[in-house]
Length: 440
Image 1: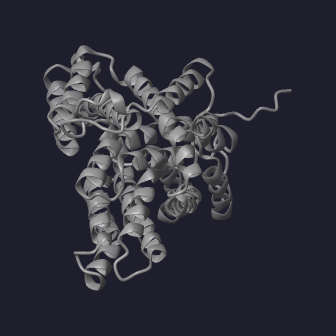
Image 2: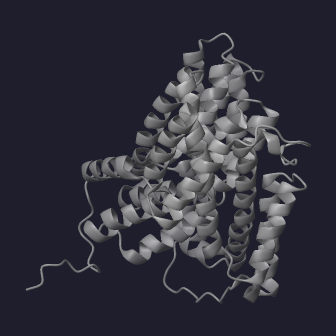
């Protein structure tokens, strides 16, 4: 007798308590980046508990790929919304983020307090070098999936050149790629590897009713999103570092297509070269810390917000300012994710049939490959060399090469690509190698 449950038969809808317990577990186990997190929810929600059917899960994942922000966290929010409405979406989305946010906050505090110590610098020398290998791994993975045609390859190359040579703003690169994709999808869909979408039948909710519901949802969540910024404007004023932090990361939340790696170069450009909140090496350290925590990799923004506020506390203590900076950054990074899901999920079927939107997304995904390549170049110059001529992408001074970083980066690449070790293992080994080589 076969005791395996029929995967096509859904289980009864779980109670809110069951949803809370399940997503608490997922929140603490969601390592491995978006691919690992999506696979974990597939196993827990679709395969094991059968709360959502496979088709709906994949359609929701497609929707999340259309939206800015971390797709795994948005998928978690959609699952909660599907099972228990807005309340369930809040529970699932928050529990997916909170464990990693707390761990990242603790690591940021330790980093800020110990950054002047020699052993700490040696530890993070190894982490920075390993991060370069991890970024290259992400570049190869995304490129393999996204560059299926010559047009997509050209978009990736042009995006890289625009960022690396022309220093074009990241949002502008994404906008132009999206417009190019929409036009190509209309005139030459084969350039994007696109095929005609089958018509979807069945009854649909009234567009008028959906539009009213969506408008109310958007207004409510815009108010929630902007609430802390209003408080800061009324209390600390627009000259405070917290206002700059909230404004910058609110803008970043709107253009976060392609995951954390895609926006990191833009974030680093602004945080390092415009606001001077932290150094390029510290940005690489933050990404290394984010790789070791559960939850979305975009949590590296919290690290940046914490350090920015810690170093410019104004009338507050560094600790109080840092905590406010971290909390504000997390708020304005993830509040929009709830807005996108609660506003767009009811429109899911219509969005899936919007060919221009799908084509624009495919083009943006291709351009993101060039964006990540730009990030890899940026990291390499700052990790391997202490001096460069002519700005952030100037020719490096060969005499400033850090041989320790080069050796550790090669070690990390071997561990990742040849020995197939996990990211956390690679970071741990690289950190120990940094300590050992620095002792020499």
